[in-house]
Image (cartoon, rainbow, N blue to C red; front, side, top):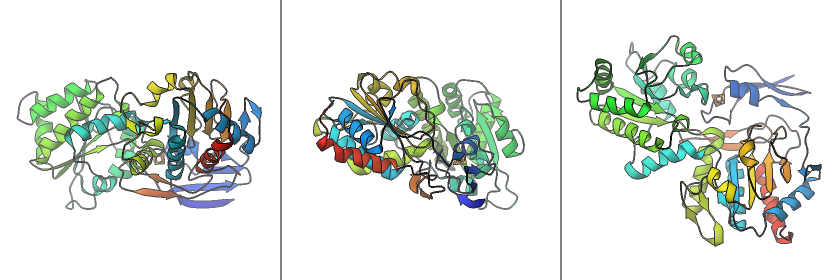
Length: 413
Ligand code: SF4
């Protein structure tokens, strides 16, 4: 058995870099991390099982690449979505999108665009994980406990003693509207304080903003006073976990709260939304096109629409779909099955579908089957995740390049 220490985890965007991986002849297994995502997703068998398939039948990689090119060539409204891959894979997907005139989006971009809408309208002040861990003396979580999507957030970034606060300072954690999960209570060594538990997020934030002037119930006025007297308050939210159509208005209210407090003491936001290299995919799209995700290359022109070009809206009207999912085995299979045109899937070999894709090409996972760069959720750091095992799986970037190279030879289906 071989042991790799301090492997980088590429999954949820928190950038944990302390994963210990045991490798044997049968595959790799993580030593328990306390994170359900890492404990399950780092578990990979040495023999990946499924190879490429075309029309459900086994095929060589060359045959599958050629079939993918035939399905994607000459389409009116193709979609490249999922985009759950490393930076190299995203850049290759963007090159292919440019060739075939596709719209591009990441599977988990909903929360990102709720945040970007507010960033565009108002601007904001946000901080990094390191600042939270080292300097924040009051952490206010708005809405659901982020631990379900970002499992080690509390353990890694909040539970450690703040290195840059005066000795004896105590970090306070307060939940506004949400309920702390049992893991959070364990990680923090006790139940954090809750205010307006179970109440609507928007109403709670509005009440807190009013309470900064001393109006409202005692619990809100007290919380407002503590925000204004903190050394460094950080307001945390995970917009992808908010329900409802008007979630960007909730984000706007949070950003206005941060802005008001920041005029009196130091206060920043921490928006969490970086699963499966979402931040890296968005950056790569901006570098390449000047636009974020949800951009179309149709007709050789770039156009961006944060609502109309979401993958969920485009999928039913697309005449071909390329779905990329190289991190985790689960996909929105029911949604993908709604595609009217052919579906080409580049995914982990263990992926299952409600409806067999027209072409399936198994690809490796960045940080497991090959090295790859992924961005942390706070967007300040690109992490290089090393390869852990060689199972003969290609990188998504290489398969995408090969599909692009095959387009010229491929008569459209
Ligand atoms: S919290 Fe996120 S980055 Fe950390 S081990 Fe779990 S999935 Fe990986």
